[in-house]
Image 1: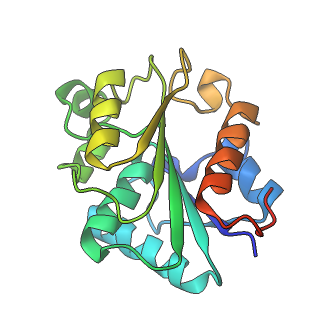
Image 2: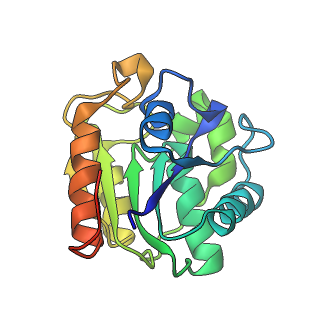
Length: 190
């Protein structure tokens, strides 16, 4: 059985035109819906992620964007993971510790400090070289700390609707490659 994607949005819950929302529809993914999607807290957001994982049958692959990435790493640090989580695609992680990011987006500061433990499942970090929420170097540092593979998306802004990433076909290709690497050869893939 193909793993179910679990979409983990960042602030504001990703608009209907965002690639996460489009992937939810296209792939029949589960979605984490926070009680307050504009005010992140590590414990509440991680707890909701855990509820969605528990409620989703079979193996899952987490797909986080921005502060949704931080939700995943906080959840992993708090719980040690889950045996049914087969991997995570972590796109455009927000840097909740950066003073400039905190000044411009103060709500993200609630997710600091960013956990630096290796993740208990395979992960792929995809980062832009021009993301206003994280420097390219910090995204690489996070990937190394999480023991994740790292891929540059080039000059892609925050990899969201505002930067022209609705369908985001390149992301679907990377997702497919990750699923191929993380699942047994007899699994049907997207």
